[in-house]
Amino acid sequence: MTNSLKKARSGQMVVVSALVIALIMTSTAMYIYDLNGNFAKSNTSTLNYFFNLIKTGSKHAVVGALANITNAGPNETLSANLNRWKSTVEKQYLLGTFVQNFDLRSTTPYYSGVYVDWGNSGTGISEAYVEFSLNVSGKEIEAYLSYNINVSTRLNVEGFIMEISSGIKKVTVKCTLFNDGQPALAKSIVTYYRESTEWLIPDDANNYSMADYGNGTYCAIFYVETYASSIGISSQVFDKRDILVVANTTCT
Amino acid sequence: MVDVLRDSKGQVRVAEAFLSAIIIFSALTICSTMSMPTENNDQEILAVQGMQVLIQLDNDGTLGQLISQNNWTFLTESLRLLLPVGIVYNLTVYDESLQQINSVPISNGKLSGNIVAVEYLCVSQDSIYNCYVLHLQLSKVK
Image (cartoon, rainbow over all chains, first blue to last red):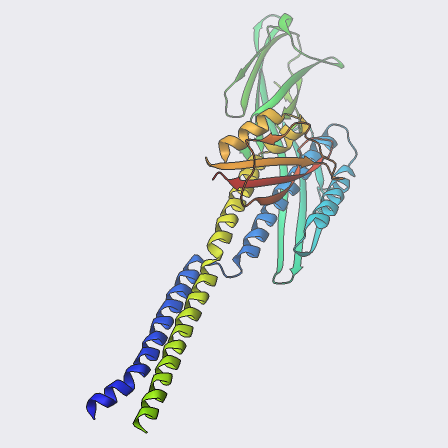
């Protein structure tokens, strides 16, 4: 009787065992799958990279526009470039609807997102500030991102004169350049000095020399024949991004 | 009567074995479906690597500068150095109106097998605005 019962149940045991094995197999597979984190992450990572390239592209567009504006281009260049960038981005995004908006900072001292101050205080500023917002809506993704792009080139100029002999003065001009608040290297530096009403570039006749300290600090030394007690100095610097900044000061 | 019972028992056994086989087979099918993304995952990693290289090159404006200068040799070399060994790439550069710009192939070999495509938008830092659409195709060397 016991044997026949055992025999009768052995078939059910096969089914139960198969079920258990199947459960173990599927749960293990699910666990591994979960560990790999494959669940709908691909779209998110694609979007993250897309956001990243949009931010980089926006910054480059602002840099290019500021380079144009500081080289005598119109202030409208910034909005024109950003509109073209916006249109390209919106056209190229294929995972859904992508809307990019930008707002040029217009609070004082900015005008149409740009602030250029090349005054006589020894500091020159070329700066642009734009606020961006991105809106993405697609099949599986709804995302919003806002960020600011602030591109600035700042030049500090200070100088002093030393009388070497009667009517001969040694002029020392120190220029320090900053890109976005960090010391930066210059692409080119031209220093002018004022003689009566003219701005002149010191050359070999003035024993002109320029020292590059490699950390965004430059020191120009030249000699000028003058009896004046002060000399006007103007430094024009192009940074590596081709943004021009000018700073003026008076050496005493 | 006993024979009939034995016969039906045999049929039940066959049915049970069949059921067990179906269960195991279903589990195997589910497992194989789940392991499918490994290939997709490989492709995704390849795409991410391609995207990272382009972002790296573009971060300081080098990418836009190389394209503006039509410096395809340097661009080819940069991609070859930055991408891991064993990855074949082919880059095509288009302008805003999707006209191909690169006059020579920017590639390190012939693509084969599963090809992954990455699209990238690049703005140059030039004072004259230029935007480029980059189409990077990648595959693993087999």
